[in-house]
Figure 1 (cartoon, helix red, strand yellow):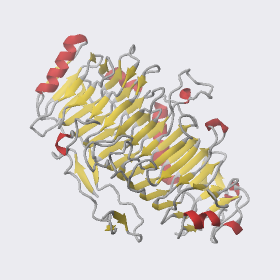
Figure 2 (cartoon, one colour; figure 1 turned 180 degrees about the vertical axis):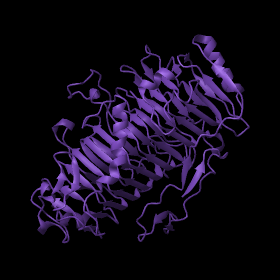
Figure 3 (cartoon, helix red, strand yellow; figure 1 turned 180 degrees about the horizontal axis):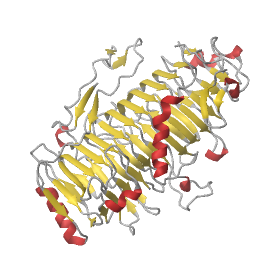
Figure 4 (tube, rainbow, N blue to C red; figure 1 turned 45 degrees about the vertical axis):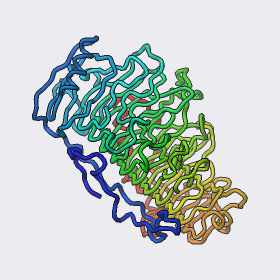
Amino acid sequence: MVLVSLSAAACVSTYTHNATDETSKTSSGQSQSKSSDRKPAPPSALLNTDYVRPTGRTISVSGAGDAAARAFQNALDSARSGDVIAIEPGSTITGNFVLPARKDTGWTVIRSAAGDDKLPPVGSRARPADASVMPKLVTPNADPVIRTAPGAHHYRFIGIEFTVAPAWAQNHGLILLGDGGNAQTSPDSIPHNLIIDRCFIHGNAEVNLRRGIALNSATTAVIDSYISDVHEAGAESQAICGWNGPGPFKIVNNHLEGAGENVMFGGADPHVRNLVPSDIEFRGNYCTKPLKWMRQHPTFAGKRWSVKNIFELKNARRVLIDGNLFENNWVDGQSGFAILFTVRNQEGSAPWSVVEDITFTNNVVRHIAAAINFLGRDDNNKSEQVKRVLIRNNLFDDVGGKQWGSNGRFLQIVETEDVTVDHNTIFHTGNVITAYGSASLGFVFTNNIVPHNEYGVMGDGASVGNSTLDRYFPGVVFRKNVIAGGRNSLYPSENFFPAAIDEARFADRAGGSYLLGNSSPYRGAGTDGKNIGCDIDALKPAFDSAARSRAANSVLTD
């Protein structure tokens, strides 16, 4: 892994394939992971978003109406390396604006003219309340308020509010970084070196807003920002979605609301051949669906938006998902799984589509109908396989139940390779594992605390426990799990079967503490000598992410 500065000039050449991501070739020439190497490769590049002090002139823009719109686009067209376009707070600039391509390689900063002392400090998440010191960029129609010209590069937005005109009913995306269609078919056309920093990006309670940011670029970061009210009736909507940009991407410390999926990579076929969005850092984010979108909830606001999932990967490689809080997902457009690793060659033109080298660690996932769904191969079109995925040290709480539309499954899985589920603490109402279709190879399930419920580990056409493990997970490693309410005669030895989940002896489960108490028999009992279940102390960043949004007066239900 290397640290890549966003001041680097190249778009797709700023990162290389990780040399430790070992592969071998099949007789047909296709790559497959070595069975001895089940660990996912980390992102081969992490982006450095440190602010580069401007060295050029300051171009001031203010006001409203056509004159302000012309002045802003003229400023974008004339800006050069080191220039700052400073927009006066209180300005409302309406139009559809284009970031042009330039030959120079320095940064242009588009920012609020408010002093740095008025904006959220560097590294702090923006809040809706910060709109008072932000200028507003508004789209008056279905088109984006900001889009990039082919090859545009080195733009940073700081402290800007982006939204749609109040009277407009349908918008397809507020910010388009790169092009998702036929206008972007070669690496040279891909915009790169782009940063959204401490911005407020939102729809409103009535608008059908399909997307906050379309992330079809390279070397791009979305940091410390607040994206809300992204929803659509009858179609999928996302706070952030990318499918035609190679990365690397940094998405860190954001509030993200999206009805269809809060965040998704894939979902449409890339038009750049062999492109897989790669080297994605997703840390410290709060992904939520406000309960006022839920018909069954007392706070329902009267508009039914299409709700599916929270985080989904359909085409992605080398992704780090760490320290996030994911919450509020119910049965609506689908069966309510919050986290999906489901490879899709969506339109049939991208058989290289893959989900591989995924690290999902130190996250909290709660108030959901179901937890994780794996689809190892596209069941509609030819694709590569889901492989090398690590699910470690996460808390899954309040999974299933009538309030979320039932389901209650922790893990649903088919035809994956080298998936490891280790040191998780899970409170759910349905199956521990539901398996079907072709077998999953290299599966590891260790050191987890989970209630068995009625069927525990269950596969189609197989009985509970060992029968399912033998049929659907040949060679499985299934050890040192606490499976409350299960029968030891049905499962491999070296697991634990207390009668009830509270016999794990949590320090204060009723009070929200899931640490194992000093009297727990499962302290130090893991395969690695550690406590079984997750290390709650390591989840502090995820809970802190929720606290930051609570301070911003967002909807949060504990």
